[in-house]
Image (cartoon, rainbow, N blue to C red; front, side, top):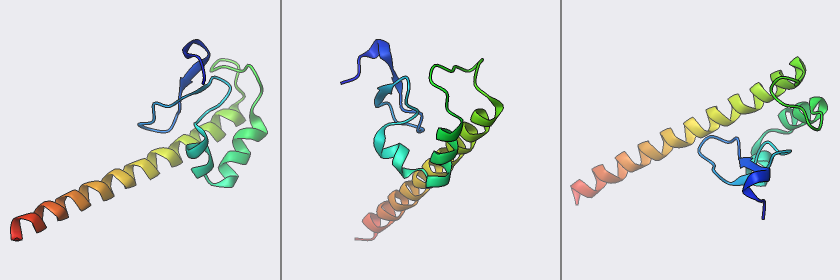
Length: 94
């Protein structure tokens, strides 16, 4: 278990799972990123960096990973809303 003082929430939209500050995301969400995005983040990661000290390359890799996560999450939410709407319509027919 990760202590709260040494953790931050997973960066995946909507995920509140605590992860060590040295990690961007929880394991399931990290591995849901395409390998090229994960590789780019790792290639430019420097231990101990923060928002002020991160390289432009790391910031670009991070932005691409987070953009992907937001797109996937938005699509999942859209699909869930469509399914819920479909279920409510079907419930009214029977």
